[in-house]
Length: 396
Image 1 (spheres, rainbow, N blue to C red):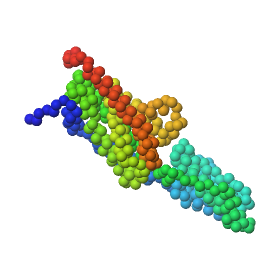
Image 2: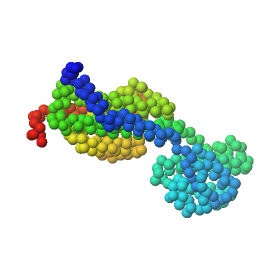
Image 3: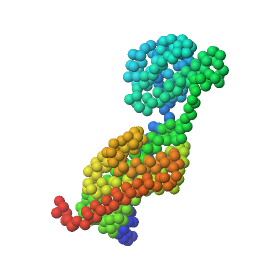
Image 4: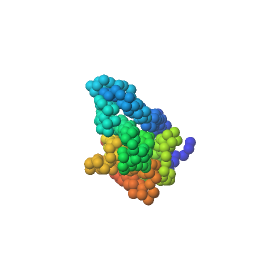
């Protein structure tokens, strides 16, 4: 028989590998399940951009000019005219039923007013409760109708004797050029999918660490036995967590392969820094889960506390709502989560191509979280391991 390894990192590491192998549910949570979630999220956002959102029109003018405006709205890639209703009441019911996302009202005498150089008012009613969809529909219809209005104005002015160049200058005296620097196509895989994948991983990583550390600690003299196997608290905790670090690193690499490979997302920054902060993100999340486990002491409490801590992470990330507008409580809670500095670093390096020296403070923030949570977990583990050993009868 092979001689047992001496107390230290490798003994705890191999012991944890055997435990993972003996627990199919744990192995499934470490590998196939997170990979499946990465694929599922990728399938949800595979379109990249919302296209052909349904809108309805109320054409009270009924002229060739109003029909041309409707065709221009329908020609935009973001929306498509799927319904023509007789009045706004029918349009409202269509929005309530979910048949369309907006209703566009073309007023009476629109053609007459346009050709007489007056300004008829076209009104768009849209469901802004669906904030993203409402914004897309509003922007698309506004751009289409602005283009249509400009074309009609140019035609009226040229009919009155102006040259086409003079007509263009008259309707647009101050040209506006917009140059979006990052994610110009408004591709949802560039910011939403790239943020959701690490958010899901944060929950899995922290919960996995909390579950498995708490399982050891809730056993009879569990903290003492774990430290004894490791020789001291640091190699014991490191050996315990390293298999999970490697497993979740592969999952994160798989998610990046989907984003940069399948979706062909651009990468503008330092690959070395990207690898560094990815490792720090996983290590910080593991240390957070381990710290919660050492404080909680049992698996149920550890998983509950981890869920409370990491569940709101996406809300505090500043992706759906800007962090600059959040209150101090949200800032503090978000600042405790490894996801926030990780996403900041990811956006800086993947999309913006930020210089490395500019990203170093955020990298330090992430490293500090790892050191603080890891240090606190070691401190609590040492205290529990130093308690007098109890017999099974006394523990019962």
